[in-house]
Image (cartoon, rainbow, N blue to C red):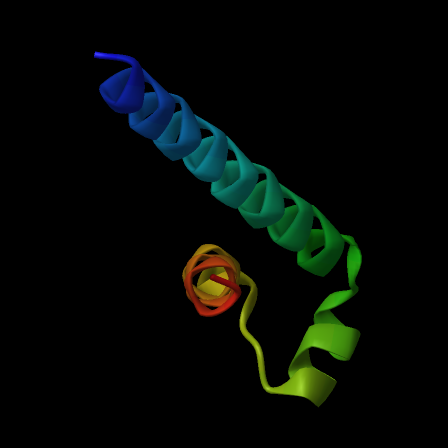
Amino acid sequence: MKVRSKVGTMNLIRSFNRWRRYRMTVNELSRLSTHELNDLGIYRADIPAIARKACLRMN
């Protein structure tokens, strides 16, 4: 039972950290002006998808 509890806790922590990285990425990209985003080849509507990909890559 203890092992299952540890695994569940680790999954919870991992999920929380992914969510936090996602929010940080969205917030940082959202602070950029439309001109700055265009320079990077990013549309404002693409920010959530880019943040999700960034979080998955970091694992």
